[in-house]
Amino acid sequence: MFANTPALSEENFPTENSNQAEISELSKQAYSLLKCNSISEAINVFKKILELDPTNNYALVGLGDAERKNNKFNEAVQFYKQRLDHHPSNNYALFGLADCYKSMNQFSKAIAIWEEYLKFDDKNITVLTRVADAYRKTKEFEKAENLYLKVLEKSPKNAYALIGLGHLNYDFKKYREALIYWEKVMESSGEFVDIRILTSIGNCYRKMKLFDRGVYYFERALERSPDNFYGLFGLADCYRGLNQQYNSIIYWKKILELDPDNKVILTRIGDAYRSMNDFENAKDCYQKALDIDFDSYAMLGLAILCKLQQKYDQAITTLTHLKDTEDTNYRVYLELAQCYIEKKEKQKAIDTLAEFQKLGIKNQTISDLLFELTKNDH
Image 1 (cartoon, helix red, strand yellow):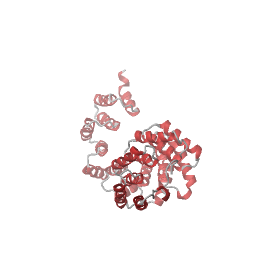
Image 2 (image 1 turned 60 degrees about the horizontal axis):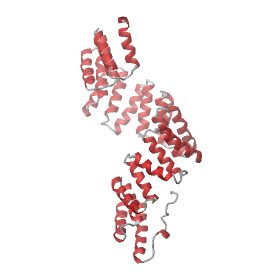
Image 3 (image 1 turned 30 degrees about the horizontal axis):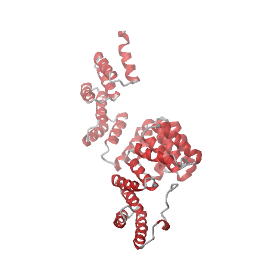
Image 4 (image 1 turned 90 degrees about the vertical axis):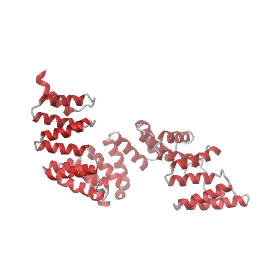
């Protein structure tokens, strides 16, 4: 797996006396169990080895690997550290320890271990990719990009690096660049392309508001996996963007069949019905979302419904409550200002918009409306 790492083969196990012969047999048995995911049985065998040899390399690393497979990362860390106390350069223990830190989101600790290794072997593609992934998680764009590109210099079609570059650019809202890398993976994978690549490409087009292109990729994903959440969500949202609310409702409802208490989806369906002027169904969906738990978007939806039905005082009560609960959604302030405008209370509308601007959040729609309301005052 890694350079300078002892192979787990028969000749590595000591056989000088009967004790060592027993350890050798137990080690092979334990690793065989671990390979078959019989984790608790493997742990028992590794512990038998430690009774015979308390600092045994294979048992300590094996116990670390077993606990890591069990997602018991703190326990795994202790076994790896125990091994490294005796042999600080043991690569299996080092990489197991780094992977534990990565899984616990302690990326700086993982990076420190991997970078130490790269000082001695800066050509190891597996390590380069892992360090790049960790830098991506810590939002260090240039460091991550440089390492991914270094991998591609050595292995131009390396899927892990291409996928990583896609996610890196997507996270930084560089959707066109992300597309380039994910499309390369798709081209090399052919018809067997991972569904996650299809939904990732679909999401790029969705974020770029090229909804018709997004539809194509989400539909491809759903052909292969009809219940895929990301495919259903992406397709519904693309239809929303195309103003095909009827189609979006079909796919939002498919998500609800799988997850009936998803208040975000209930609110989206409410928004779709509202756009179709089906106020009764919209209200029903918003209320169902609020029955599950408080949701500011469902509350906002109900307030907008009241405004559309010219129930301005009701809308103002709800919107003021949202505003006072430290909701910084510009839409709350905008809808509230528009209610005051409809009631011919211009100064209250101006005060509401000015209050939003004091939050230090820039929003062009708010600025434009405030300018429109105050232009004759200058």
